[in-house]
Length: 237
Image (cartoon, rainbow, N blue to C red; front, side, top):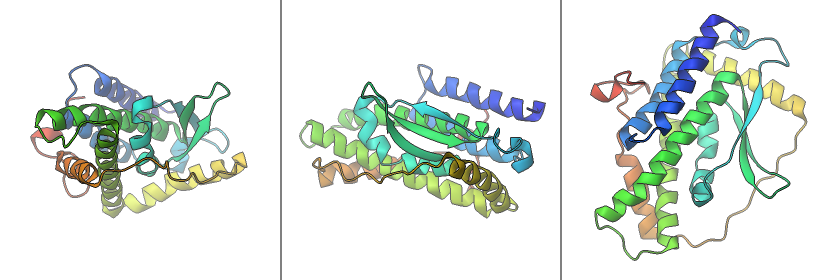
């Protein structure tokens, strides 16, 4: 692995540690997601940087907080797309379910960062909503519906950021290069994935809409192409 590549992995790992540290605000967590995109694109990762076939891709398993599993389900696909990975849900023999991300080393590290970012936002969003006195009637359905709305908005914004990165000069070729390596290696696994059905749990429309609004209102501190800009965009990580 080149020194150039090792530095990227080290920075992404440090960013993840910073993101999950005590005292990380929603704005800092969301800025971390944008920083992941900036680091991935600043370090011009092409197929040649990823190593030889059969050695370039791997997998990580992320076990979500049980209380956050449903909302994260709603945006885990967007996280994988944002990080040029494939993802699926896998159940271990002990019954524990985890998200399996498959991709290049930098993409896997990035997926860990962004998943932590989303979890951090979800943990604080409901508390902020309650403190504002916006709760309609506090119960599990309302909390779950609100967080589902937040997660859907965050997923949409990650996809918008991804589209912005593809739109910059050279961005499309870079993303397609990374993605093609992942797709080739994934095909070699010979896996057959099944599409899951709806959970069957109730969704309260007002709480869901409030969650979507909250997700849209959070500031990423981004320029139109998905890079950090302004005071919120300082490299604090």
